[in-house]
Length: 279
Image (cartoon, helix red, strand yellow):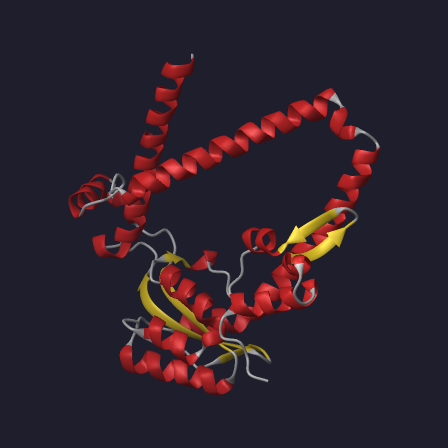
């Protein structure tokens, strides 16, 4: 049978089978007593990187949902929701959820309007003020891991990486390994930045051993993690202990810090405005 390239599509197919075919119940993927779990709630409640990961995440969420739904209905029978303390906790949780969604929407809109845009002069000024903070107390590496479902796919990924480097590998990886397209995209996005080598959560000890022998530009041989998951590592950059990162090497991290600072300032402005209006 042909493997689905889109993990979300694979998940929806399974949920459709769970729900049954057609009818008003087509959007229901699980039931517990009088409660129903819809496809929309499930999709909004889980995150996943690949087809197999999506199915595992969905299964775990459905199981947890059934447990919670059963306990919730049992609590209703005992009248817990009518207790004053329960009502206070529900009201408090409702306020917190509403406020968080309000802040998220405001920040998203402000970001779309360019309020948190960072220019190169801000990045340079931050680097000059805090240059000593970018001296590495331990080795830092920029390591990308590309995942494949077969030895043939892994060999193709490695050949692309060796031939073209990191510049256009994400698109090539998507076409070569559609099953892990999103996982590879995330790996490339995160792996381009220098990170402490000790903080890398590599899948096994062999990967750590191979990494210690790699120099920038090296691409590892395919490493089998299990029968259907093979990884190829590409070392983009390395700074040894005592070395100072260049501005280009830490530009992305500085931009993130500056964006967070601007978002904090924006939140403070929102809070002050609300206080002036309602206090």
